[in-house]
Length: 129
Image 1 (cartoon, rainbow, N blue to C red):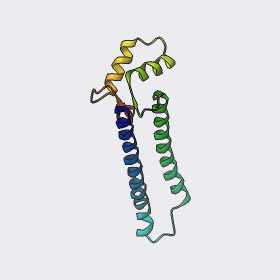
Image 2 (image 1 turned 180 degrees about the vertical axis):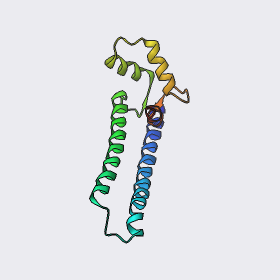
Image 3 (image 1 turned 90 degrees about the horizontal axis):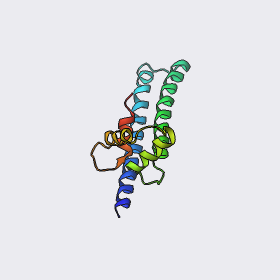
Image 4 (image 1 turned 90 degrees about the vertical axis):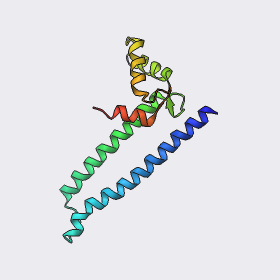
């Protein structure tokens, strides 16, 4: 039962994320086209269009990459991570890393200290550069 609830929460987070993407895509389009409409231009100049699309693609690639990393950690497809998932992932990548360091990393990412790391928590922490 608990796993089903966690999976539902994960799915709801994905729905919200998809709705947010749709909203921001519309907002972004409106902002981009405001100058064009304001000056009654037929469209964006090719170099401006290329520049805008390059930035947009780079942002999308970053989110796709983050989703792939989360999925690699989430070997059981639960929609959340547990400390065992962290131990396994870190053991695969850095086998000599002390377990204490892995536990500290998990505690850092598990912002509400419930023993589970949601994609939202993971994304928040991974967003820091």
